[in-house]
Length: 254
Image (cartoon, rainbow, N blue to C red):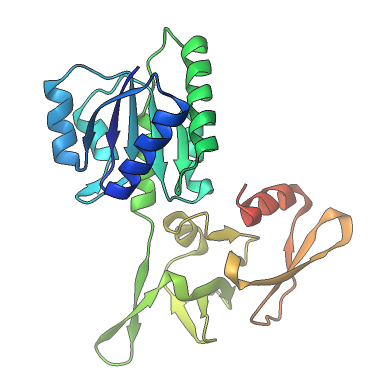
């Protein structure tokens, strides 16, 4: 099986090639590339390999851009440092992924899955449309906000510093890790759409919270949960019975 490696970290390339030689000696690495531009040029000038190992983040951008220029029809295994929640889109498309640092067992399992998929879907071509949309969406998640301050100034706020958003007297407030509060013009729905769903969860109509804001969780009546935050609030923050499973899945990152 002829394989291509697209990875911009030389140490990662060496590690991957060493692992392949140990557990999958039938895989021949025909080329290693380290940029989007070189990868696009390579695909245009060479026949499609039988397998590609893709690192998502390359020095010149996100490698999903390659899919927009090249019709890649061979199986793909992604290597990356993404959180598992963000990788669910890849699983839906029957695309495997290896979280760095990659070990021998990771390679063995990925190759085994690849062979199973080849048997099950040998007549089908992979559809990367959902993958590309998911990656674009992830790249567009907010990392900072600009909040009007006193005078003619805008105050930059990092999403990493926000513990939770809540509604108070019709206004949306954000509580920071230092306890400060700021008023936002967006609704909670709009904020939920622009924030990484792996970091923030809409527990109810009044609260959009980050995982790091949670102090502990109480079992509540009728199968509900009561979420206690590190910054005390007046309201009882309840997760309905219907959303308990979703909340637990989000919190544990499964």
